[in-house]
Figure 1 (cartoon, rainbow, N blue to C red):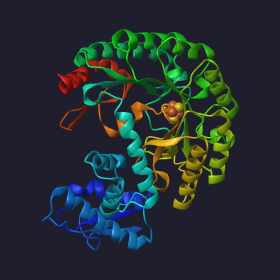
Figure 2: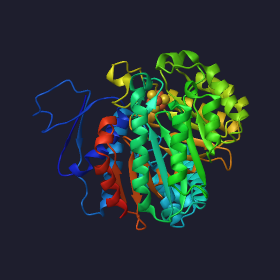
Figure 3: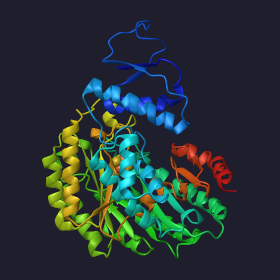
Figure 4: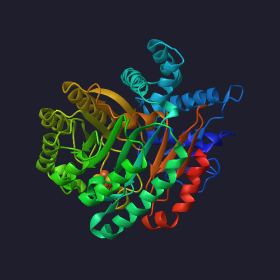
Length: 464
Ligand code: SF4
């Protein structure tokens, strides 16, 4: 248990202190102490920390950055550790880089500022700047804040993976809820569509859960509804996460081909069978290869694969081996996630939390993945971070030129309105002055149906 207390004002930065403490002491619970530790009743803390008083003479952002650097220095001295992303604890490090590039700073100036203000290490600086530059070029093809994107979430899966923290219901128990869910979601799309008038729709993303856990008929109903309700003629991209190989067959893939679906995901997560068995994915590596090859044979020419690094028992050698096995398949897009254990995952709730890989092991896995992606001719084009990530690292999307997932960039860089329909999804309005507002949908299936009018009202507030 980490105990911390504020030696003066500064409580408005509590979120940041928690982020920094979590980065230096991953997985350790934290407790905000009401008083100094000598006055606090409890003992048994592994670390006690007094948060210094911020220097209030500076502008707000400067106060926060200076204060975080000071805390970082103290924590680094106490633990002997340095963090690859320095003082940055948010999920969108490239936004800071992007805003500086947009202001006209040269990459070398951006690097200097990011190093000075946030302590980024050289490797992350190169990755961040290269990624932001690619993102900018790709975003230039979109309509920016004039356009919008649609996200439709299908919260059903063949089974629940042990590390999952998404809204996901296992089909075996929730089969009879699928059609009513689609009814509500189609109604939500019909009612929301007028909010966007004749603005151009840039991208559609059907995610989950596992969208291909729907039957061919249900998939057809969903896709035809989207194409009836929204202007899909000039889309830049239409992604469907096929995700779990055990949810894919030729009939479903043919349904996708009947519509303007341009990009799918087929996700191995790892090519180590022992790991798949351990994490509750009910498919084999052979099933993955078969599903992927089937999709290729049916003409899908932009296929993403998701990988997770830091799965229980895996080493950098396993990751390198996974990449070696994937190379002959020539994916267009490879999204590499560092495992982030969240409270809602079974690994957490059932106390089966695996031992975390060390920082050095996590970095070695990330390097093995980056080298594997480079050997396939894939370049980093978007990245984001999460709390409790193995090794304080990041998730990176690699893609062949021209095959990048545009929606991924839009959601991470917050450059466009996203209309999100379905249980547990969050719509986002990005106003031309840069202000961002959100409207979230409830997560529970029954609530989603019962409270749909309330959620539509939230969307009207964003866009009317
Ligand atoms: S396939 Fe994805 S959404 Fe479904 S249970 Fe596994 S991790 Fe969660």
